[in-house]
Length: 333
Image (cartoon, rainbow, N blue to C red; front, top):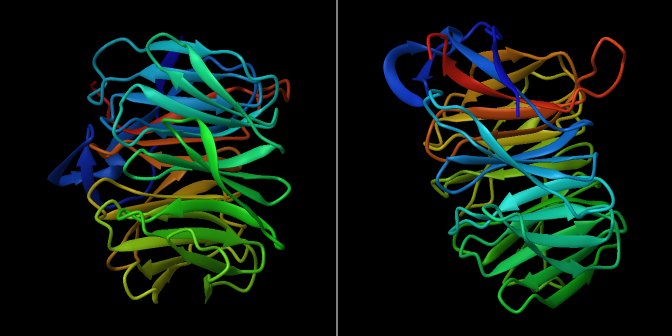
């Protein structure tokens, strides 16, 4: 489908160009490209483990998989994944298989897609699914729904292995890299940390003064970050379970957060008119990407400094644009 480059520059410091960290290059010299294909707004974007394909999920009931050259040279190809009968709210890739992507939808189903053929396997669940994440070894998927039910699925057997009903608002979920700790962000402002999926014995981290909405794991397994309705992002030590610092540039509830592949940068976004990129170790903002709408999803490429992002963009007729963007391309590519 259609993609085009646009000038979305901002103030910023040093980092990678064309997806490769180069000393002396500036984020402010890089631009975003727009990708059109969905009929309505995009809720979720995610890269595969090789950083060569990006999946997008939309309220138009479809997901799409885009083959993207990280250096921005070749023509973009995409495939439409059709089958869901309601909004595709979140998706994630198998951490070890570059062509398997899982989608969670409001039609109460989970689908595991082959991104080459567009074929899928379907698992019917009990509620409107809004959150999904893979375990890092690729053996299990965790799914959360609007009724605050959590389901753990065995990917190979396509069977439910564990269910948990929360008595609080349950938002984004994640495993640590080792797979022995499971993290749940809650509407109560705390994070539940569950060891070996023993949900009756959680460790509760008092994290924020308002609901915790989103979570991201550092690829180097040092930290995790949590975004909250109090407009802050907190950074935590994975081993010590202690908060190290907060990122404070936003004024609205934080909807989405992501670490880059080296663990050097963190991107986070909300209804503010920009995405903030900060240095993880110093906490300082190094760049801001202007945006015209509230952001729903940001995700760094796992190999390159390319940031995919999608939000509530409208066209001049106030209809959903169905667009997502990728920041990090050099202007001459």
